[in-house]
Image 1 (cartoon, rainbow, N blue to C red):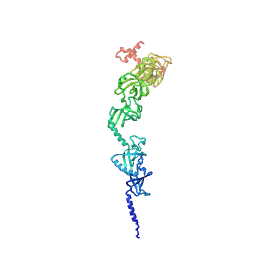
Image 2: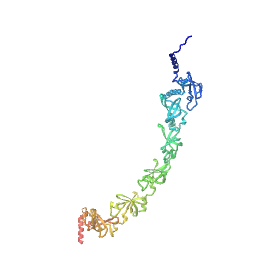
Image 3: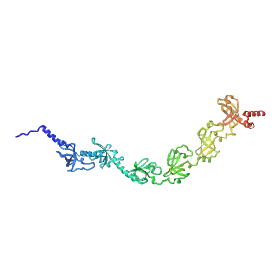
Image 4: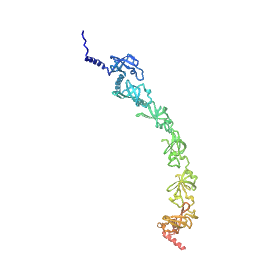
Length: 569
């Protein structure tokens, strides 16, 4: 009996390598197979190997659809391993679809073509899209032209996408739905804008409202309806006129075909209230209106819907100067105004608020003629006089020369203080210049020739009194009228007409001096001056002897007067 030679270890290794070599050509490749059976949720596929492979039926189910596989179908699968621990082939339908999809997507990406896909899941920052087997990432910002709160209606629906980025090594694909919509929209806008014309009246739907206006959808292209073109009347905010979702009738005002911008108007469909404004609002007419807006330079008054006039701050009040208009009128207040000027071309009407009331200076002149006595409060003291508040909210001025008899400058102004109530005489009323001149001293009756009683003595202004020096000071001398009359202080400057003689030390206590009454202080205290007396005597001598001695010097005139006095003695 012949003996059979046993195979050696080398023979076994050679046979194994031959067998593996034949099978290794399948691994890592996409091959065609035939569906032989469907067992529960597994699909059995024969790819020509020693054993069949099983693939989950889910890999044959597109997102949002039913399984698409039947017994006998020829399908592409990816051979991951020829044989696993159970002796079965490791197959993948998803991997086969993915490899095929990548090949096709790379060609489409290089050609810049659109691809079809289906949104099937949500991930951080966006969504996942099935591109025929390859999974792509759709960023949230690339879903739509405007932010989308709910993407549910878009999921499970086949739709076009644009490939933005591909990296096969990392398995990374980024797509955009927004770029497709923008491109489609641009095409639609370009076609629609060519069909529109300026002046055309069209209907649209309000899509968005801002502080400066509203965007209206005209059927694929948006137009801006500015707030100033919504109505002829003043509009504070667009939502006072329209709301989102409203269907509005508008007129196309301007079309910029280069930038595809359209300006719309609603008020252009209404009659212009400014037509015939000059006839409706003649200059000088008295009207009633409502305050709609207040600014630093004036207030706007609505005369009718769509027509407003401006009352400038200078025309607000007769007496309130440099005051903010908000302190004179308030918003929504009804006021009477006078038309001052109308400019229909510029759509401007100038109004006057103060002109609708009588001029308070005219009223004062009627009620308080020149010479009448008025009473008022000292409002202010300036370097040239006092301002007195008078009836009718007007002020009158007392010049410092009209404050007191014989008192001038700061001394006269110091006699009165702010808030004091005084009586004054009306000296002049200038209506055009809005000025009232008053005099306080004219009320006292202490003018020239008026008798004033002080300390038991009756005195008049310009009267010469004999006084006794009671005290000598550096600034002047203190004197007393008579033995027990009122005292007065004669200032250094009033001690003599001659500056060299204005020295208090040349007087002695108990010495008698003559001085002239030049006025009275408050409390009837006399104001005396030796200088004024000397000047008055000199004028009197010149008046008496100067006319018959034409060309004579002052010394000659005084000498003649003295000689005449001696002869009479």
